[in-house]
Length: 178
Image 1 (tube, rainbow, N blue to C red):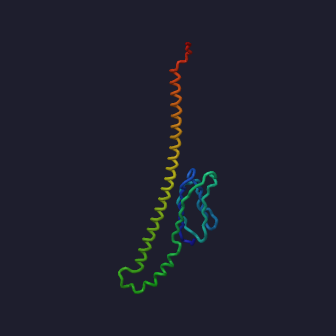
Image 2 (cartoon, rainbow, N blue to C red):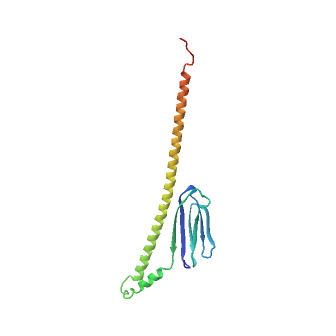
């Protein structure tokens, strides 16, 4: 990453026991910038410096269950727009007669592009929330079905015992000699 850029990371645990995970973010100098313990989601923004960043999702506290994680890295002001601006400048000559200059059009296009990319990011995040909620809902559905079957089994056994007990009350237990 280049200095002056912005790094934003969003994460969310979609499935797995407890819906929690440890998250680490280290700077290029090896300094821990962010350390979240047992969180189900998080959004962090860091002003970048020159070098490579390292991030890690750690599930060592829960070795039995595996996790499904959605994460997204958003890099802003990385420095690629400067080259694009230079490419457009060769077309600027001769546009002084127009009411709207090429720079205005370029600014509008970049604004629409930024808004569309942010919309896509928000929709992706909403899909992740929906996936997590669906996993929870399916887990609850299975749990309710299991306990309903247990309850049904207990009711059948209890009704059979009651029928047996009622029959035993009305049986004639005297030995009759004929």
